[in-house]
Structures are given as structure tokens and as C-alpha cells.
Image 1 (cartoon, helix red, strand yellow):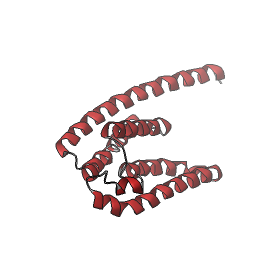
Image 2: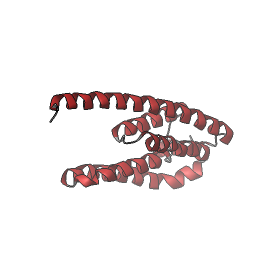
Image 3: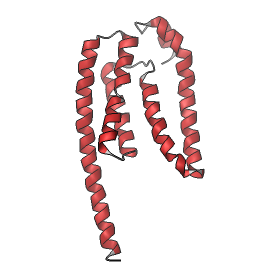
Image 4: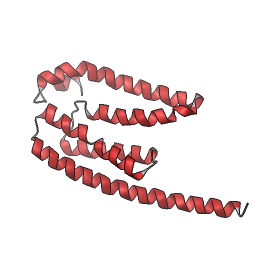
Length: 163
């Protein structure tokens, strides 16, 4: 979000957006710097890779809570895309990954209620539908990852023989 967008009155909660904007701007810059620092540090200390997983989960919540110049449909699609990509990259378990990925959608709908004064009942319905779609999507990804993984394991077993 830019200062010009706030100044022209694009948000129903103008005063709140004006108060949050400086903090959101600093948080956005800091999260990019922390992400870069963690990425570089992982080359030196590989055990920090787990920290990246937790940071990315926190990062999704942080980004979903920031005011943005975007309509609801694009906001949901963008958030689902980012959450799905993170699910694929950091995949380790279907149940915990699915629950975390589905709950990561909640701040998006809270943000829409706070900054855009949208109806809470309609947002709850959209959250349930988006969560259902996300669970089906993640289940399909889980099945794909599992099948591809088994092909790789079978190939490795055959390659190594009976050693």
C-alpha cells in the first residue's frame, strides 16, 4: 500500500490505515531483510533451516494482516497461492501442514473486516469455502508428493540392489 492510496481515501477505515502505515512499511522492509539474512546464514549453519519454516509461517500472518490495495478475490487467490507454494516447499506432514496452511487464511479475512468494513457473516462463509478448497488442494498435493516420492524410493532401492 502506498501513501498516495491512503491519502486519496480508498479505505473505509482511513484513520486506522494512516496510523498503521509507518509500522507496516518498516515491517515489510524488515521481513525482507530477515528473510535474506536467514537464507545466507543457512549456508553457514544448516540447522537454521527449521527457523526458516517458522519465519515463513509468521511472515504469512504478517503479510495477510497488512492493508493492501487489492480486491477480495485477488487477495484470496494470492494468499492461497503463497500458502500452497510454502506447503510444497516445506512439506513434512499432511495433517499438520494442512491445518497450519488452512489457518493461515484467517488473518486475511480478519484484515478484510477491519480495513474494508466487510460483512463478518459473508467473510466467514468465504473463509469456510476457501478453507475447503485449500484442504482439497493440499490433499491433491500430498498425494502427488507421496507418489513421486515413492517412485524415487523405489528407483533408489533398485539402484542399490540387495546391499
